[in-house]
Image (tube, rainbow over all chains, first blue to last red; front, side, top):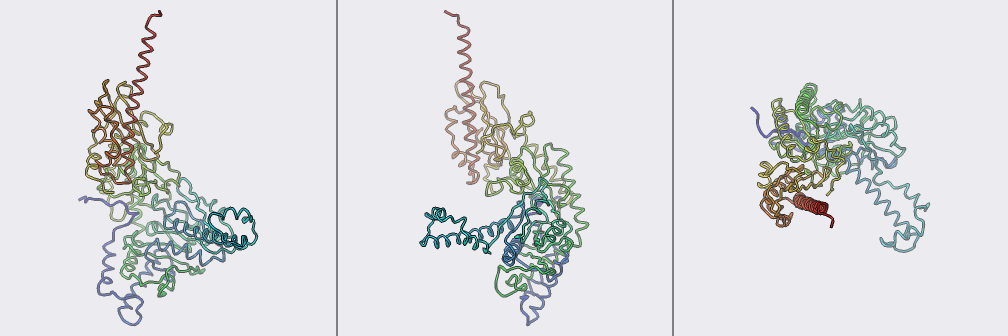
Length: 454
Length: 143
């Protein structure tokens, strides 16, 4: 029997698997100990549980348990990886390369690193200027003084600049229209100052899976560290840190049917990769992430990782079958439906489609018993359509018309059929209401119309 | 986003969806917005020769509140004089539908749609008047 509402937004988060909850329960009740308590049985039990989870998470990505640092989630892992590597290796270089389609946890961290560097550069310019002018420099006279003393050509300042070790310079690479990284562009972007490349395993909006092995090989060849935000891909597509030469990887519990608020950063030991910690304190997680461990959540994360590893071969086939069933039904009954991003290299449960002439939020309202998401501006606070779709070259109107279906472990064929029927009916209804659909059907080229942007 | 019951009602049961003959001299058509911005409204008004709005139809590409704003406007303008209809402001619409602040632009668009439709009607009338005069001039015997 079909139960409403239907959850089909499994890229946002996933429900807790009952087996995971069961594994966690003792650690929320009687086994509440602090894993750092070395002198009594409560601590020992907690520590043993954490170490078991560490091994489970490591096994999912082909790592050893000593390479896993538990965090509060993937956002923290991404922050720790980027900031930690750029700071630790600052004598080696200051350049970071990433993609325009990365998650905000990577992009905004990169932007902060850029800003930190710019602030430092600005500070040095003012210092040098006040030295040259033998006077105080203010915001008002700084530009005039910089011209007067020809600051851009100043050899002393140039020497100082070469020693700026704060933050990073960042290259944000375009992706191809299928969503994949251009490996030649990546190679071309690498300089002798490049320290780190951060490219996600699978995209959270379009599900595009990047060529990890090729990226890893290139990074290894160039002596550049390789970090990947693997959040959306682990447990869904094959991922092995050694086969793919990954040096750092961010993962999280709640995308693999585990609890929220727990994640991990994989940090390679052979050859050894070092990071500067962001959170100082009691020296937990070998000094890389202080703070009392969230034992119950870590146990749940471990259990979720174990289940994902065991079930992935059959489960990803099942998800792919459901995804293709949904896609076939939608494209059979509706015209002007476009899949965003390549179908070939894609998460099995992801379908991101644009229904021309129908606005995404309106469609989501029409199918309110089904939880999905949209790249439409109307669903975001910023009123900007999805930057990921824009990076793929998707036109703004098509970005507004996009819907992301995220099929997961607990979705059934019956649900997929229900969703397909509902979406088809509602798209048809909304198109009956859409002036654009009428114009398109009458042969008007919508691009030739002079629209008044507002 | 949580919408008011009025928005949901207009969205689920939109009033006056459809198309009027845009070649009809008594029909004014307003097409406002842009696909790139995520909303396009087309409002058509059938206006009698003495300036009363007899019928109104809309089609809208946009979010729930854009659809609701257009639907509401078609209800409001019917039976009104052209002058009264153009006095409807976005504030009236936003207030009636209790639109959240990020959706105010939908009500602005609906106001613009009324104005654009009325302008189109007036343009057609003026063109027709010129034609009538021209025809009369052409038909009158040269003195």
